[in-house]
Image (cartoon, rainbow, N blue to C red; front, side):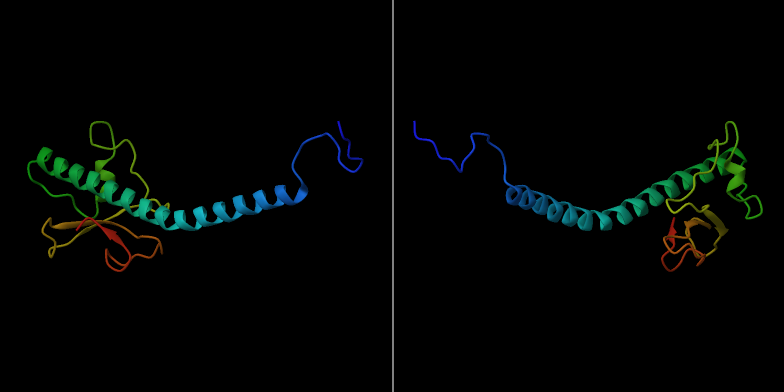
Length: 133
């Protein structure tokens, strides 16, 4: 068996190989994070829309239980909270704000439930607000 004095018998990876693999992993993770950030906002909007649908359903149930009397703005969504009323507590929108309720005669439902959206500014259901209409 021929021996080479400059070579050892231990096997392993060189520093260059390890650095190359770490660099490739870093590039892949960076691109994955970049691609997922847009999906996060989309997921938040979809969650808000789902919450709004649940609230509209509960408002309709409230109206049926009260003999067709509509929910007033002064009562607000708090009228839906309590044992047997629909919600144990009102959900917050994905941005941490309370959902809003307004009487809106221009709406087919007669009211509007909305989230203030990502900018957290109350545009009365318009602009970037996410609305039940």
